[in-house]
Image 1 (cartoon, rainbow, N blue to C red):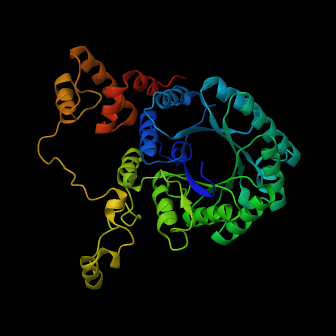
Image 2 (cartoon, rainbow, N blue to C red):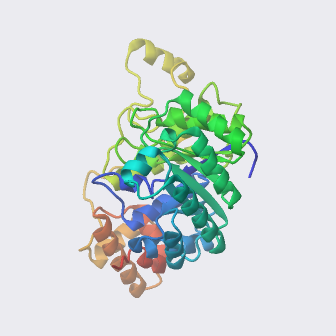
Image 3 (tube, rainbow, N blue to C red):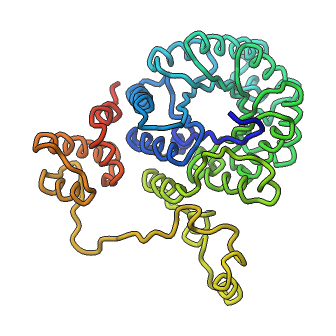
Length: 412
């Protein structure tokens, strides 16, 4: 990896899916991993290895990466920094290579959430034991998460990070769990932390005060200024608990286009903004959450002009009122909407209707038996997603039927 670079770790499939009253089917999580890979995202925190209903999905996605269906993205698992959880996670997902191990570090959490059951030294000991266990089980990279870092005394945070590094951790995740930091405080705290410990930093910022993106890029700037790589934690469309997380596309735009970052701070060269439109709309469809009209880059009004002064300026030269071109974020293609007869696929579809839809998607089958096998999987996909199967989902199922079956099989 390049030095002094900002990388993206997307946690839609671990944090975004914890949005209250919402969620994703395992097939939808898989599609997001594939889209994140196409978008050049460094790592997807793709789920919870110690959680039973994730097992088939996690193993199947690692198999997809093994056969190069995913070209570059790392798939990382989230576990509590507890030895027993790490052992269980690797027992269920033995191919796992990248993990993040998490424990709370603030007095609020230790004294009130844990109700005095653990002392500060117990937190340090449990985290170190978990890191060592993950190394023994074959983890190639380990991030250690300091939950509620923004409400943890700096000296304690330094002690926590030093212990993690000494026992083999590769990165520390600074978690602004309640969105408590502002861009100025997170810059000062992250810079001081890195200067004391010299370890790459992950920035996980919440949006409770509407500053998740601002705090994320400020924290990344602090890490780079102090001489280490930064890893910004994002979710697609900012999904997440309460007010959500740092939005993936907004964060990338902030690093690439803002006056203080453009040509000064290096974003991972593999990030491809042209995938923004596709991935954001797929997440919106899958979460059943419309994209806000004014969302940067992908909202309906992101490139819309009505007032005379603005319309006149945009028509003369788009740079008068647009900081970047809509084609940069994957917009501009003509999308066909069927307004006449429409054949869709669902849990009760028959072979004739299925073949009609598959033909439109240019899918071909060896024989009738294969077509019926894929139809059965497509029916099941509709059952688990509760929406019409998309073209990309059907194509994925047709290309990888055995893994698709495994992904959609959730066993208690």
